Length: 112
Length: 112
DNA sequence: TCCTAATATGTAGTTGAACTATATATTGTT
DNA sequence: AACAATATATAGTTCAACTACATATTAGGA
Image (cartoon, rainbow over all chains, first blue to last red; front, side, top):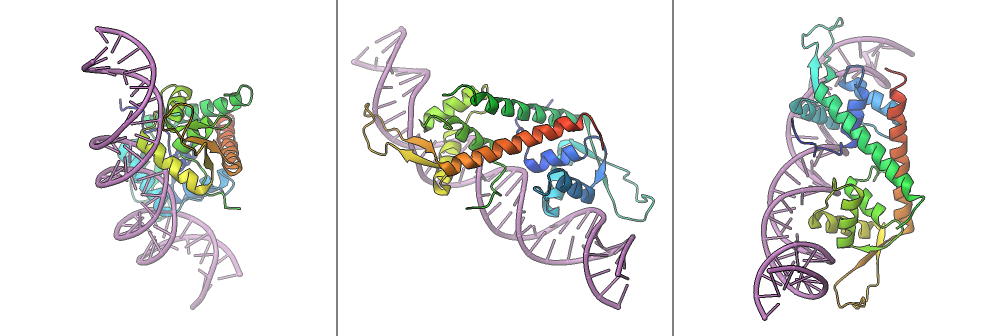
C-alpha cells in the first residue's frame, strides 16, 4: 500500500472526492456541486477539474463507469466513481482536518 | 483591505502562523514547534520555512522584532511576530476549517 | 581537546497542482 | 435564429513546496 504523504489533499481534490463520495457524477456536475456545497467560495475551472480528475484516475482514487457511449441521451458524459483507495484517502483527510480543528480550539484554553 | 482569495492557507503557512499566534519565535524554533504540534507529521525543511517566512513578511502577515544584533547571547537569531493582518487571516482559515469539518459530519447523516 | 549533535539561517534549482485562456460540441429556451 | 447552460478537453503560466546544498555557533560526551 502506498504511503500517506499525499496528505494534505488540496482543496480541489478534497471537494471533488467529497462530491462523489456517495453518488458518481460527471465532470460538469462536480463543478456545480462543489460550487453549491462551498456556498460559491470554490468554483473550479474546467482546466483545474480535468487535470485533477486525470491525476486521481492515474493514482486509482477514482474510476470511470459507464465507459460505453450511450447514456440514454446521446450526450458525451463520463461518470466518475470513488474507489476504495479514494475512500481511504478521503477518510484520512477528514481525520486530519478534525485533528487540526481540535488543535486550534485547544489553543484558546492554554497558551504558549 | 486585500481580498480573501489567499485562502485556503497551505499547511506550511497555517502551522507557521499557529506556532507564533501568541509567542514570537525564531525560524528554527518554529520548525521544532510545528514538528511537536503535528506529532512529527509535519517537518518543515529550512528551504520551505524561510521562503514561506519571506512571503509572509512581504504580505505583512508577520514582522521581525528585536532587529538589533544582540539577543543576550551573541547568536544570530531573528524573532518573527504575527501582525493584526496575519491574525485576521489565521482566524479566517480556522473558520474555513471548522466549516469544512461541519460539512463532512453533516454528510454522515443525509446523503446525495 | 576533539568530535558530534543540536541549534541556527539561508540560497539555487526542480517539481507539480492550480490557474487562465482557449477550443469544441450539444441541449434547452426565448 | 440566437443565446445560455451543459459538457469535455488542451496549452501554457504561475507559484508554493520540495530537495540539495552551504555556512556558522554552541553544548556535551569521549
